[in-house]
Image 1 (cartoon, rainbow, N blue to C red):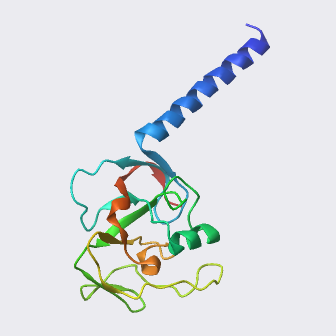
Image 2: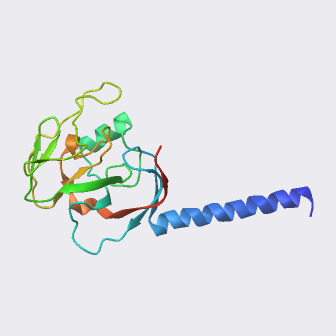
Image 3: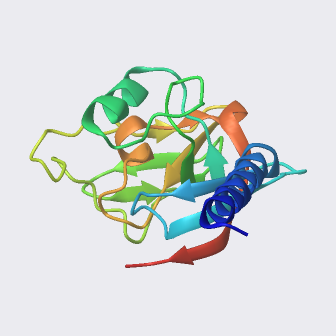
Length: 177
């Protein structure tokens, strides 16, 4: 086989591999996480055949609102296929409808402080952060959190509609820096 034919064969095999990977991502529910809220790397969206529970780590599309606009404007979230124009979030559900959330320097749920929930007044660039006022979680919404102090989560944008849940978030091949 000539050098040119070998190069074409390698390119063809590479194109097939890329196509297979694209199909796996599109139809297999795989996503790559590039944000520090959770481990970097390959994740899978697993179907959720039950009600969401506190403690579930989920993929969820944020609604198209001012919080999503701010996230895109400041680069907190990448552009993606969610109705908001962002990619889905990976977050842990920490409060459900009927629970009470208070923000007092940290998140307090039903009177209990949530570990690793310090609320920042500014982001890493020194820009003021909106802070959720707190209150009772309403029907059809979820309060989300990540232990990463710089995470853009419900501490800042409040509870979001549960209808955006895509499924459970499962690590496939990840690493923490």
